[in-house]
Image 1 (tube, rainbow, N blue to C red):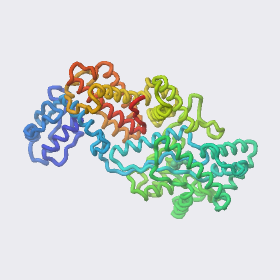
Image 2: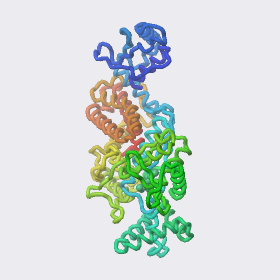
Image 3: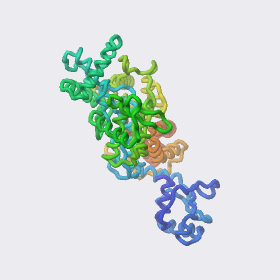
Image 4: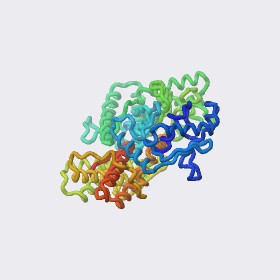
Length: 579
Ligand code: ARG
């Protein structure tokens, strides 16, 4: 527990008031008045006593109870209407480290930093179109959605992770048409979603010289809408290939969804909402018969085309109601690229115009483009930076790094580590940038063990594991970490820096969750890793001057390890014990 939480806990226990407001705690300018001060004015009415009396009696109460020795304070005094707390940094370290270590058991209810916010949120991410495989942009999307879900879960919330498959529409019909024309009923001979994507590219290539193909794709869409048997058959076949391939990629990235939505199942319902709005005169028909909405502050938006077919927003109208209805959500987050900022502005305004009570609970978590050093990824031309390719590429780069350091690993061991490090590098690089910003992904830079990278943090974790292993070799295999070590001995500057950073973990994770910004946590983990490395280079652990100091340092190492491990976990990244 940090000093503020400890002070609040003491006040709650000993002031006998309805509510202690932690935001009122001040840091006195004058050091002689302690490190924290709590003003007792606010309780004067409730307790019918002068603030000075409340402060005095409160302090008496606290100090009479034996509890002071178990707090991080060396002294607690009453000065006028204030209760002043003097922090004992050694004691603070001791309480902090023991809290972190005791709560390291994943089953522990009181995980260090875990919040208790009882809310239910839905996070929609990935959400591919089923005409082609996932690309690098999806990897940014998935990394963000996954990490934000974990961060919210860590705040105590119930998180439902969902994924919408945009599985119908003219773009899907294009790959279907190409398959019908040139596929010769072939079965996939490559990863199944790539097989589907191949036909989408084939279509684009042919359509360049033959615009009639575009018309044919539209025809196919009409046939699909009419439920034509043969069309539905190809559609089902190719979508199954797409899903099959997506699942493989999700599994590689370590994500799983609680629920899938399918556009094909909901787009018709969207039409009903639009027609209802038309009846209620919220929407109207324009000259050529399309149903449109005038949205205050935004342009006029087409909701149904004149031929009655739906547009992208039609399905989203219904999907939003479906999400709200199914789960009684406190908030609903859409992780979608910033190319769709306008779409979501319009969508959320429409939901308001339609007077859905939950319209304000929707949030678009928008993120920027990912460029490779040589320019924007393009999908139509078939020069996409494919998600599977980039994962393989990262794994290859990691293999090289591992082989540089180790010569006695089996192929399988190298492979397993390469996956952890390669993915760690990729995800961390994508997450450390503020989501709003466009970015360049530089694979070589991301894998470096020395830069501001995932492997740098993973390496700090592995290094601690190695320190602890080394100590165990000395102390005997069954030696337990010295949990009762005196952390008050940790007085070096580097030790205090590390301790201070450890105490910030709960605030950092809370901030990252509230802002939907895993980047906040990335920054913190880099700082903690760096502070740890500085400590490690200046303060000998296993070879410390005294046994007591060694034990205290081991404890610090273990606490850092736990926090790094948890932090990486919240980013969706594994923490290897060896690099
Ligand atoms: N499939 C869409 C695309 O790739 C993204 C869907 C986002 N989610 C939504 N509810 N509109 O552009």
